[in-house]
Image (cartoon, rainbow, N blue to C red; front, side):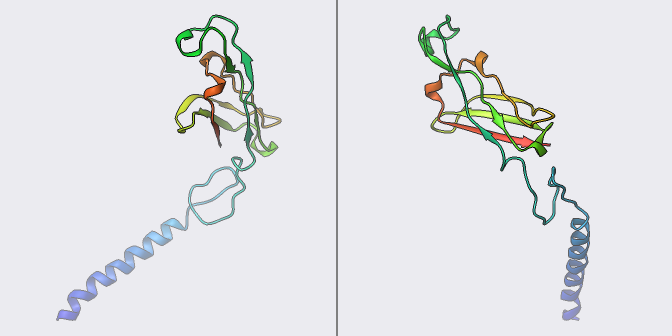
Length: 139
């Protein structure tokens, strides 16, 4: 009688484990989207490169107390990816030394080249504050 009390939970556990395993086996992995599974995926994030360009802010700035009357500000953050990433969405973030976001731009990579030039000019980000850039490509 004691053995029967322990046998029921074990059988129920085996049935549930089997059902969950069968359900998970139904997920798929493609080259553009990882849903779930176990496969090697070539991602666009690994191929993505980003930098930034600056301009001399010799125009009166909206935040002169922060930047002063003249300062280098971030103009664009050119993104280069593999051609297979063309038409995918991107998200570029400029970060300070403590990885805090200074500004973000999102958009879609060029449909032919897979490149982009997100414009940060209007955000008036001092180039001297930028310590890092991150990019995420999805699609």
